[in-house]
Image (cartoon, rainbow, N blue to C red):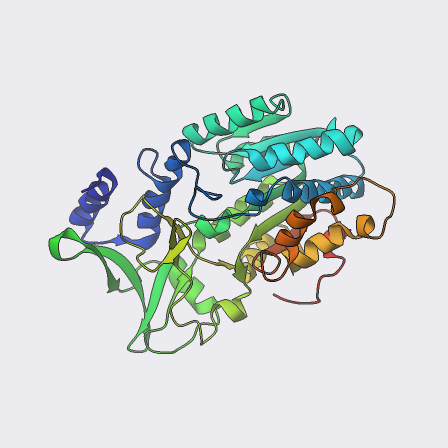
Length: 379
């Protein structure tokens, strides 16, 4: 039995069962045995990892984001410092890609940047700091263990995340005999981890269930990400003025909880293969659930954010790159020279429609280039 499974087993023996969000948190974030600690031994992304991300495609993703951040800086009145706050920075590569572009294409903007990384894990901070130091950006980057630490700085700029929210621990519920019950993790034969349904015993989850357009189909199973809503509330309260950009895979609530999605979105990834064996080998595989962007938008609005738009990655980057595609003078991301990367990021058969972007703002009304081709509504 692995050390992490023994830790989980001990908690279950004490409590009878544990909530799935607790299991997911241990499986992903345990400082010694969690899946994310593997980054120090084996990369999670790219060919050698378990899945690809937009950052894996190359520096084009960071350049496009940097181009959008440059316009945000202009809309905000060229503030100095301009905060770029990233959470879920993985190995620090995206930060380097963004800063490289800013230094080359917009040096006056680069001089105003204060780049902040939210990272609670000491081992991940060490990995990020090594990469960023090697790329020559140590003076521009600061680390914070939690979002609340930023509040005293009263940051003006952009808070962004790429594939962070899908890894925040979720609660799992199922419909049985015309009532909702929570799926928890328990021990079965030979100490195998398994599911057990239990009464819902906390008001926060019960209130969330009442607010959602859930199906009444018997056996319908889905996830509710209370952690994501709490996280977005923290982000909204921490920002003084600027934008919040959330990139991930997911749906508005009307699709997330549609009748046809009877089994939810919870899944695991190992060596680029999806698996329904969520509870097998905790710490050895990625665990993820799609994002309910409607819930995120509402949580941000409660914390003082305004929802500006919801758009897929293809349309967002088409908006960002419109001037370059139209041969308008200005900073360039090099689309023609990097056409393969551009196609991978934006083509509907690749990453273009897989990822969605939620853009929110605080104390700023102006829209941005990335929403140029956004469809009305959506959430």
